[in-house]
Length: 159
Image 1 (cartoon, rainbow, N blue to C red):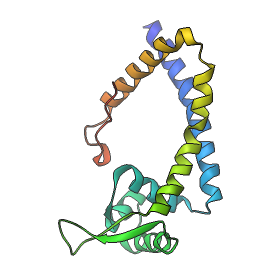
Image 2: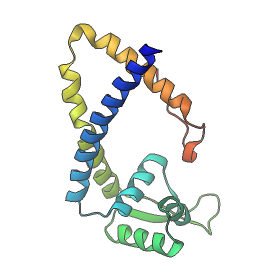
Image 3: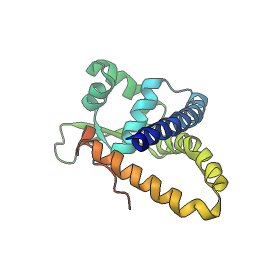
Image 4: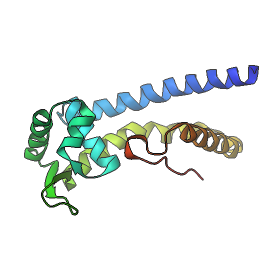
């Protein structure tokens, strides 16, 4: 039991550092793009889960369809997303990232994870295999805690 508590403390400490570093770098990159939090959330949703109807954007943001439509209009006006007919039901309009939108997201994601490269270089070579194995095991355990279709996304496989 004491070993589990020690693991909990270690994971909590790691998560705090990871989140602080990752979120800070991401927010700095996104602020530089001049986007609102709702706009960033919309772009990230489209990046990670693909095209969707405007109503889904509204549901996820907790806003009305009209408010979601305004967010989409602004992002489309900036050339970051585009509307397209749903391949299954042509009456439904889907929104998806444009090349420019993918570029903005890529810069934010890169900023968020850049520090991980520096961190990896600080792990001694003789500890790399054990650190990688432990992180993969923790990732699998965390994925097992998620519902199979959490927000429509299946947990990613970890080898």
